[in-house]
Length: 269
Image (cartoon, rainbow, N blue to C red; front, side, top):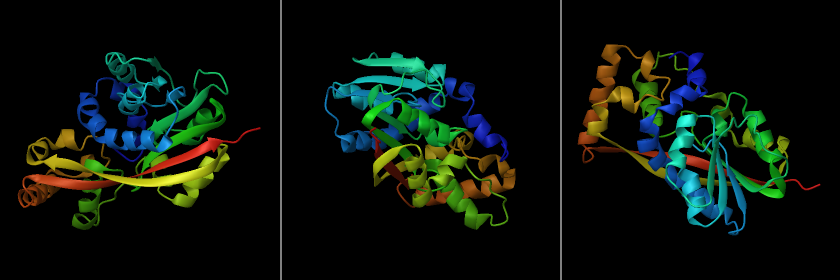
């Protein structure tokens, strides 16, 4: 995967439609951050919530468990179907592009996007759409990774490749995610979208990589733009290094993955 086609892959619904790994592994990992976001939001039970780029429903599950109504949207039919199959009370799930929400203005009390809008091809448009559908003073909550390389296996691979293969031409990850690692630029983007009273919270959880996971590197590093750039000898060298690291730590590598949860309210009037 080249620098040019890396973002394109992530913006292709078919890539996500059959991605069982996302539902089985990534969803469980991101649930920690979704729970933190929901707790920080502290919304009343009567709040009507929108989940943009909901994936397989990590945030939606917490909203439903609190008794709130939620509309979960994603551009992937497969992800939407996985939410439908949960059979959660008060949940509606619809296929929808977050850059062009088929929803009326001023409609929701709160809107969330946990690690979703940051991946959009036009993330500025995604933010604008999120704010458009909020009621005046409605709450927007956006989750993004603190590091340009993201989190979990991607972050580990980028960190080790930087010193192990210093001459490797490592491509940039998705532009929105890189942009938002800079606090000033992130704050400016939220303000342009029409949000005020901005709040930023940093939360961290460990992604645990076992030696069994290292035995399937193409699966483990499938979201990384770096892995396809390595030749076979580099891959073998890197995997040997990681296997040794895991062996020294109880057969597990714990990758601390900091995230930023940003909140703001739609400007009234």
